[in-house]
Length: 407
Image (cartoon, rainbow, N blue to C red; front, side, top):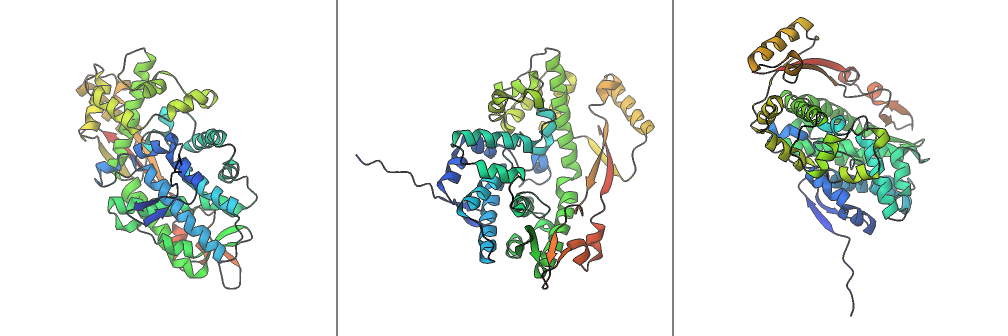
């Protein structure tokens, strides 16, 4: 009997780029792995769908889109006589595919709430190392590139820099799914203008306006989407729900949660005790665990937990005020006193409903420059090469302060 080998060189249909080809059997095996399939259950934009109802796309969409753009980048650079071997090409696809695999439930919102002091990049690396063992060392080079240890610096810049493949996909994708057209960058043109000079990833001079548009789009997407006031409130309330749940768990209070979620609620996880067992538990934790628990917690006997959970589930969020200056302590204290009286809570407990934080938006960091390659073969930082004054202005971080309190 002849056993037919499965076809692993599939084609996927993406609403933004059209058909995306899986470039190798190794990439196919990684996509099929449960670690990667979990990304289907983690939203790319947390609670942004409370503002933009279409923003329900996942980390899975984003990772596949990044891999597609990396294929284009490799083709462009090879066409410009940049030598990239078959092994390096595959490693680039694997590294960009797995760059976000360490994101936990609700992505950035719960990054330091579920696991303390371990970034999603560090968890991504742990997943890559585990997959590497399973795949007999086939990820060695991809891990080297991901960590920035490979001798060809521009490979790392394609994965992580101010004009990397990650940003080229998420800006275009988030703009598409939210309907915020200001973020719609020309990723095709930016990739077509890429080149390598002195081992640096650079953009050719004729692509300068595309880079300017990219930086401005990034700034506008931060204010309009990623730092939108309603999204900020919802994400901070989610953090507070988890904070309260952990307090109750520490006191031994019984909480409804899936087994993997319970593991992180009842056991404080830090860098030192993040072992293989923790990684396996983390690999089964996603948005569904958190949402189903919050839905159940709306009926919990703890007033703070149930009230915050109800507010999130029914989108009856806290009020938010944003301003340039810091809020005065007295102002915050007055609100805390009002809330503690109204909800019959202690002042410490009222802080779950009244809190202040700051947000920063810096579209361009000059310490990691985007270089423009002119016709003479010289490199110039975009902030100096641009004839637009606002690129220089984008290097200044804009800081704003906000306060949240019940309506």
